[in-house]
Length: 391
Image (cartoon, rainbow, N blue to C red; front, side, top):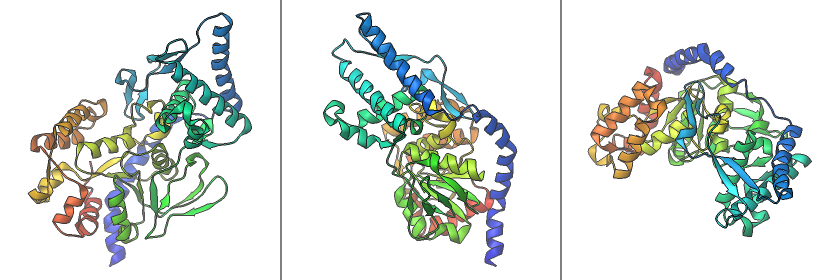
């Protein structure tokens, strides 16, 4: 009986996978231009930047660094097979060494260039936190280091992990998945009650083994833990769950992309029915403006919106006292999302967001508990997966 129920449950998921596999060659072709950059090439690119500084000094000119502008939508183009990507010839921000307003930033950038050069040259690795504590007085904050490392990655057109700079992961993963870390450590994510921290070196992962039928991105850690406690992955169907605990870090996004590349199974997103949750789902699917230069390795355009849909709130008659009025900030965020290029290419998503706009309410996933305590894991998700209730 249970085998029949599981087979019934995943039939729509299997149909979706077949559709995705028909398009996978197109998506793969779009990403073939991202090839491994040799250590020698990375060192040469850094040397050229430093040479430019030295040349300016030899001419008694103040050195200037030109960093790509990673915060402007004007520099972004949208490709449905890749997501948001930085346009060639995008505008730059100049960091001058002869102006009081930018001299500190100039020194910080040069310092991090030197740290990266030594790391690549010696084939060793450091975390962004290591770099910050290397000279806290110069950098002032961890955020400064994080931003400059990404600026350098974008400027050199080299993925951050190829610069030998790692970031501590905040994400968690669980389900039908085993793999080897670069150092040979075997990671088993199949413990029903405990999750594994997402690796800080996704590129080094190999020998991925899984019988999962789908990957489910869970926006919030609290929801993720609830699904773990209810043993969702093994009860419903073999699957993999991952959470970036809110706005995802780069490693969580890289991991979702790695799983898609290795397994080619459907990837679903379970987020709150609010503008913030929708934006988080869009980051996994289409990427972000600030990291658009790495879109080819960070985005998974096949991500499907499983829930919580604004239309679910009406369909399931979620009690009114579990709904939350949209704030002015929510309404502004929603209007901004509706104007983004990727939403116009997804009419089903557009309709859901417009419904939220008209109803002027939002809801957290936990609001389903107002219907029944176990409604999420026993009824909502099984039915969504059984009947193809995603958009």
